[in-house]
Length: 203
Image (tube, rainbow, N blue to C red):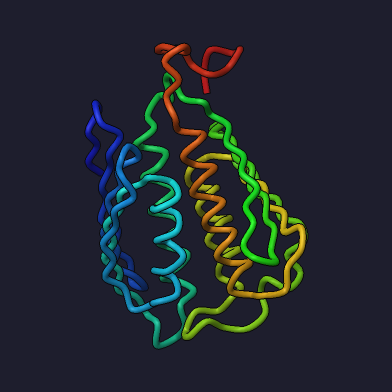
């Protein structure tokens, strides 16, 4: 794991018998990304996190997609969550909380997060979220990604799909909303200075 302590950047390579992943992020970026993966729809979703979250990201992924995309998506979520936690460091001065409600045509989705150093993942209104495929990407993998990301970023992540029928729009709204919520939560408020955003004095 490499981290730049001034800029909130981190990079990691994680190799298992199922996947080989190298990823880097910059939480203070401009939304640039470069992907090298065998899963086009997954790249499409990650690009929304980057653009809406102003997160720079590079990702090289190789996985056992001859079986399916599960290990590849799950392990990428683990790596992404680990990188975000590492890049945030002691969380001095950040907002900590982020919330965004995002419309996508006929769809409305809300995301709320807390970089609390405690894991929770709650999803509501997602009964139809796991139906079908997008190319080789099983729709159910979006919930898997969100859960594993939240777990390894040590954060609370709450998702509610208020309404909507278009499956693509629902998934897209979720990932865009997550990007916005992350951007809000990691923002450094100059009025907070170098203080921890907690009455406990620690996160």
